[in-house]
Picture 1 (cartoon, helix red, strand yellow):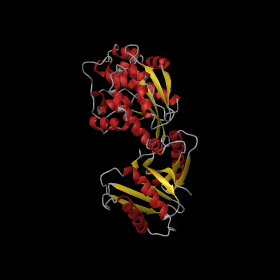
Picture 2: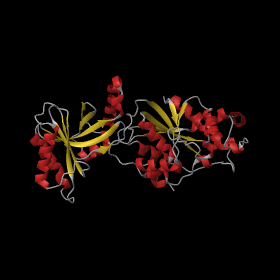
Picture 3: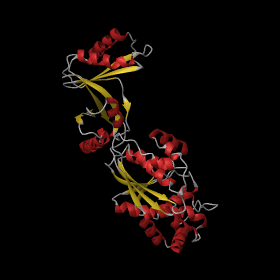
Picture 4: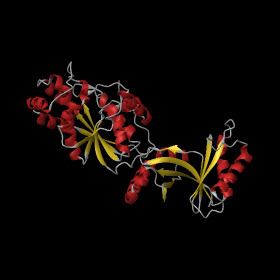
Length: 404
């Protein structure tokens, strides 16, 4: 067997699933194939990890795509070599040649021997490979905290050598715990809530509420761009765009006063629930953080939830704004969320927002505004956009170019 590049995709939480582990693995492998996006993909199972090869892709590109797949804790580009110490040492030297320009880095060889039929012990193989590296480069050994750890994994009939151990997304495979509809604004919070929901195995679709006809399309462009950016973690999604400007005005002219903001949020949940049931989404997800703004006090959240029967998940309920912004930067949604737009939630905002709205007060406002008619009217104007780039494509920039 000649040396060949591959990637070791190491599982995390899935390994704890007992009898259901194979089901989770199957879901993960389906998602991996979609994320890789080429026809010739070979995925082989091992205990606790998967061996992935895709001859059509460079190793770096294959690694990058696998790093975006939920359910993988570690993504480790490697070279697969024959079952000999000489082959392992040669592969280690070749991998390290790219680091030769560095100033005397320290290194160590870590051996994991799953193939107990190998003629050398783990320590003996580590010493053999390490001696070859020392002869070749003259680098010092540091067994405690090496700058360049060389990992040699011995399977029953082959050996994998790697020098990079990269973090994956962790969590569970997208789609294995159900389907969610995320209320996606153009802000920082809701895209992060969508990401955290995906990480717990939910397949996420989105609904975006616009203030049309009283606002411009900028928020819709942003919502589409955010959904497209999140598509790197999930192959495909549906974005519902719902104009609610007239409904918001009707609530305002029905004497909502300080209750306007909470009344609007109840309207959003009513519309979202109808869309969720129509498209087989079992739960709603919002970006609420307890106490962050007046509408997110405990009484207001409870009053808002009273408008729908579906379970409403709030993954960020205990996060503060700085934590949310840091996560938005990490997952790549920050720059889009920072772009200007006309947020529908700012329409008809009263000078003072109630922090303790009651269901009875809100019911009176909704009765005067004829809430059922408002919901039907909003749904009649809704339209869908399918979001899901083919692997390797760049996001269209036309929408972002129009913002601002």
